[in-house]
Length: 287
Image (cartoon, rainbow, N blue to C red):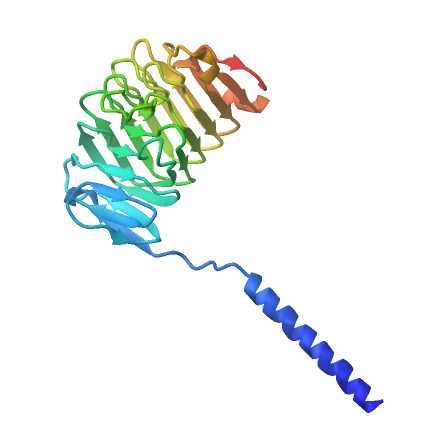
């Protein structure tokens, strides 16, 4: 009897240890990844899935997040290119005035995914050509996470403030004027399209607005004459490729039209009172 009792006890102990080890291995690690701070005043920054490079320097391996600043009192002309399949980036008091897109999520072939946070006051401006202030190509995902900072971003020519860019220098078979997916969870964002008809947020001239979602924050999107404040370009030829705009929170102001012909606007009924727009041209579904 005593032998059987010991066996039952040993078996129970083994089960207890096994349960403990299983629980231990199943607990995810909540350790913060390494954070790398980069000064944009020192040169162009390129972030990939493997790490980063700056200026003429070689790529440095890095698997953590990034905080990008720009030292000095004047805007810098350098740019940020993100080609990573998942990158966590914070812009901290970054001021850029560039002849290119100040921030670019690579090309449609990179399928970049970026979680962006804002700290302090950030100003991104494209000054020449047909460039987006932040280029978000088809297949790319840009998410503005909850944060207390602000961003003012302006495109040039036919480029959007946030979204599609002009066709000059585009890769064959791509449509850079089309916007990818942009989500706003927080922050204070003001986006203005280029003077040649780019959307505030969405497509460049002749481009689709992609997928735009707003759940929080304060978002203001403005277009020049002939452009769309938020959504697809009014000159988009294939309406089957038009975009979607989903608003379920935040405060939204659109200077220009909200959506273009072919776009679909959805959201909770109560969100409709949070949206101020000069015109509503998207097909409304869900309000």
